[in-house]
Image (tube, rainbow, N blue to C red; front, side, top):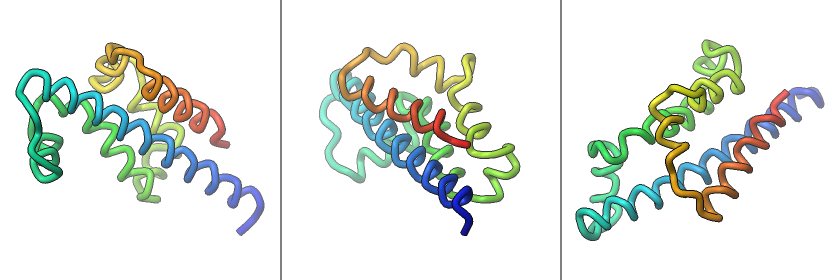
Length: 124
């Protein structure tokens, strides 16, 4: 592996890790909102069912799919690279981005979002 490809792989790995952190923070936020309205979620299995099937969590699906696609070299190539793939999810006017900008800022959200955006900018 060349230094350039090693650096690119490291930058992609960092982006993936930061997006995964953002995903977790957002899941926690949506879960808390859901539980305020519907009561406690009874465990990981119930949460998984909600995340995959409930409308309250549907706006997170593009970020979930992005995390999967970043691990798929063919999907990354089809999109024109990891930056293009990621920017498509965060582009204004998308369901994900439109809902993301309404999330009440919290230290965890702000930190995770800022780290993800820095990692995106670090891609070559």
